Image (cartoon, rainbow, N blue to C red; front, side, top):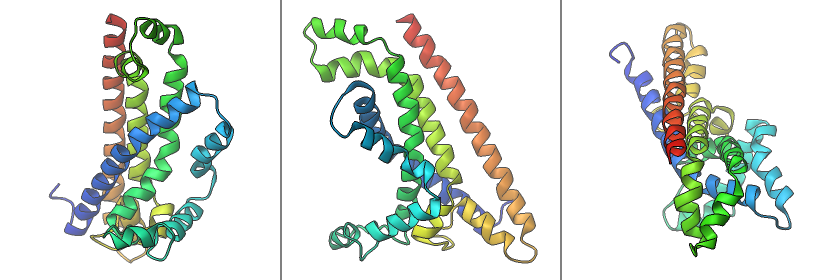
Length: 230
């Protein structure tokens, strides 16, 4: 990418890093949450469902401000984490946290839909053979919902790549530290002569998003063929 300037390339690298860790970090919790919502009945289930989807409804700036109040160095969680050397506010790790929170509903929804499409009798048949519930999930359920996990991961990654409002509110727009791709585009559009750099970053955003979608389609089809063959 020689046609990108140092600051532009830095924003691309940071966005890829933030999106990767946001998706990877949120995926295990998304699988657990989706399983609880799809398979379990417990008090507060609807409340949990509402909280999971809240970032989709709230303005991103509100989500970012709530993250700042909670995970800022003076916040109830952030102040405790600061004592052990973990700081989110105005760091790239905070950008990853904000992206993960915003992408989480998409992860959960895709995985939950896959779980609800799985015939529970398949899991029950494995359980009647004496397999523990955890082993049934790993050997039966997980392969069957692999397409949903892949789709959710790709949607989450794409959402993380495009996240702007919550990120800029929580960690600001610091070049080289918290300036992700959308933040860099916004910054370039605020200065005279920055339209060219902004346009190049827009092209990168489109290319990454399309590549992610095509890859997800390919991986999902492979997973579906493998499940059908099993």
